[in-house]
Length: 102
Image (cartoon, rainbow, N blue to C red; front, side):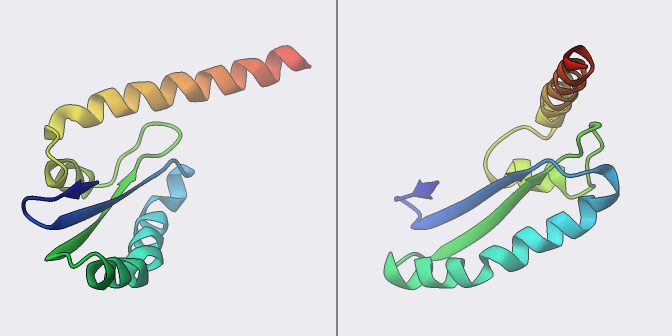
């Protein structure tokens, strides 16, 4: 997402790992896009490039940092409730499909 007025680019990456991998996934997203953010800043002549990881586990557990990520891209911090609902419903649908296939 690019804000042309402020010359700011937001690199948004969404991940849905297992519950025990939330923190490592968060760190991985930051490290993964660090070099890309520096290249974008130079190539596109941007003032800032912000990496915004959105990480929520398959069971709906969220890291403490999620609300700050949502605020960074202009979403209300309470948006995580809708994210949790969507993830849990999709996880249930996957489990249901697997159980019905047997």
